[in-house]
Length: 444
Image 1 (cartoon, rainbow, N blue to C red):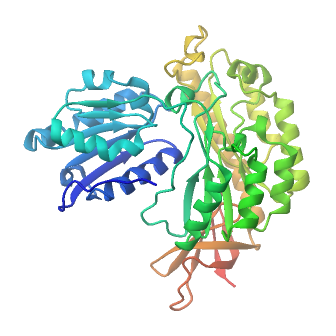
Image 2: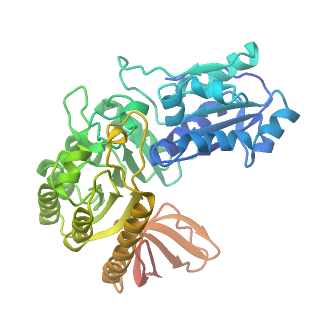
């Protein structure tokens, strides 16, 4: 249980800008929940805030430059209000540590990914001491025990089940910015999810850098966690992201089949490359052939499964022939969604030291070809939904329309009938128009 003492009776404004993945989005919600306990409330713009936090991401290009640039935009605000506190959290803070305080004089504090729960104390110390603060040490020895803190969880929310990563893919900075892998206790997660259900949550998305490598101290693995949450809580839907192909085993797929009423059939399975040699240099732990076998296993048990993936183009040393193998993978695996990026070197990573880096124009051209190929495939795959009935969990209504997600993780829009209150309810929608990410239809 987190205990915090309010700083004062007067509420102050906090503005947090968030970059990166769903883990970062979830971390921002946790920061806001903690700060709300000490009389801060979120505001919509920096000029309304007495506390500004940049929740940074190291995964994409020029992350440190982006932090410098954003802090620079607050120079006038700081000049007009010397009491304004500006801090950087997230992966760039963990990566750069005290160097950020030296390089960006406007900054008052930096805090790493293991120091989020210390945020109220950091703010209190800043106000009393007026000294710059850096909290960037990993706490590897502590068990991973947290409450899911969500101010207004709504219909669907995220639940962290693991943090950190032990895989050390040669392109990825996560082990250096999120630390070594740790999992929450099974019993704690059951209690957490049931508590969210009591607050009206209908769906949870289980989060982790490699969510299916989950291992509770009691010995339960990810498949057993899914089964337990399905059978011992009243949650209606369970999703998860991101899974690692090397840990996607038959036991997990069997549990997804057995608990298919609650565990959704959408699977995000990052492949990163379609060439085995490139995958080996990436240290991914599987070959192209092994990945395809995993996909066949998934469809054997879950013929209605919906797949998405991540792909990196232009990895050091990637030849045109190797890239062609990535393109050809799209013909073998029916990805309905694809998230693709140009390779960019990240600090501390092995691939950043590879001598055979590719020119930017080559990477850009390959990325465009990949998008072009997938666009036509995704549009064709989407047409199978036309005329079908999909089950939708309604998340909001707006201007006479209901909006929610299907079991396949498609955003579904449909006209409302009269004054129905449908938020939080499951409804059947017959699809009339289908696009790769969205469906349109009418209520049955």
